[in-house]
Length: 473
Image (cartoon, rainbow, N blue to C red; front, side, top):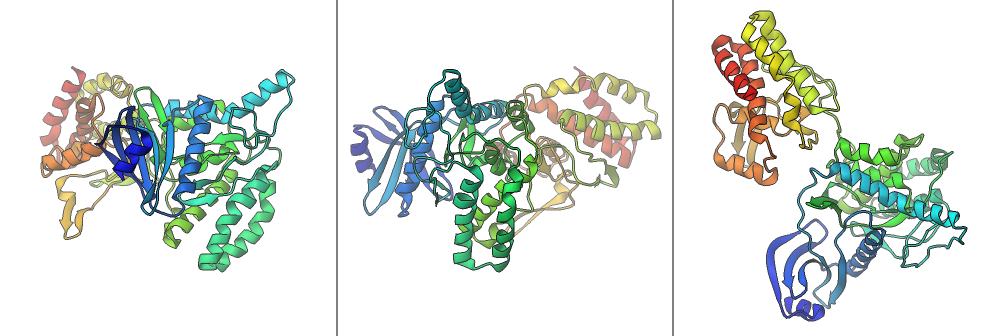
């Protein structure tokens, strides 16, 4: 394969680097070439060329808008009897973290790009073209795309339609429903769809939809960042309703509240947004059903964009209020530290603790400056006595769960032993320490020391006071 790739790229140098990857659809590998580093996706399925050609066309279309960074596509290569390759620019990417808000802004710019072209044409009193097959950035007044694209490995017909509801029902939901009918003959799904398709037009009353160029499959695994900003990749593009893009983004996590806030500051929610979002999520649930079978329904998992939990939990025997908050420092100060210190005040009236806390609580927000925090589902009390293993792997138990800052989990884990350095190394290989980690770790340990003081008495007072003093230095 590498000899054929070297020949197709016209490169004397072709050296595999340490960067490899892929997913459930294709495999990937980075190479050094005469012209710089490239990333090569490979797939041996018969439909691979169609899939990669759609992805290449999608990347080209997004690239031309100059709104959001994508890898530059280079070439689709057939290796007969072996596989199909898609060569693109290699980008040094890391997980989306600091650039979440910027991603929301740039995605909105992508979605508004075609609308702005239309407004410019009207202003110039120019004739508006149809958009079919046009390779330059021109206003498109229909829904579809100039080629087939694939969401996963399933092809999406993108025949141009003047009406969005017709396009979505006919070329998104109905093909997925036809595959479900063919493969499983699910009677309930068939009957529900027969009723639902009649109601879909009513969901779009009084909503004006200008065709927007979409990524088409924007879940958390298809976004990243580098030092210059956010990056999106693996698109399945077409011109559609901008709201469609947010459906899968909200289904499987990976997008912070700042992403949505930035996006909706440019494209506000229209009346009926939430119901249409469920309609668009329906497509993705059906697509996953067709890819992975009946067990691939993720309806029980919903993205959580706030901090808290749907009910109180207990750390020890003390209840924890988990009322939802949009801001993590506010949640932690109010529902964790203040709640514990109120108990200390009630039972001990400790003057020094009270005075130190009055100084400390105003300094806590600055410990989170420039740290992007996405709500993470936590065990909540992960000390060594609550972990074990069997032959299949590790086990955790006795949780006090809530959605919070992932760093919170590591505080008690590091206080009383029982966790080896390999545990922390493996964890941080996936979630690296953010700037200021060590100080925040002491802050989170403070909660556990106060909680122990409340449970077991003044033996933990010294540790509590000592940590508060260190945090104030």
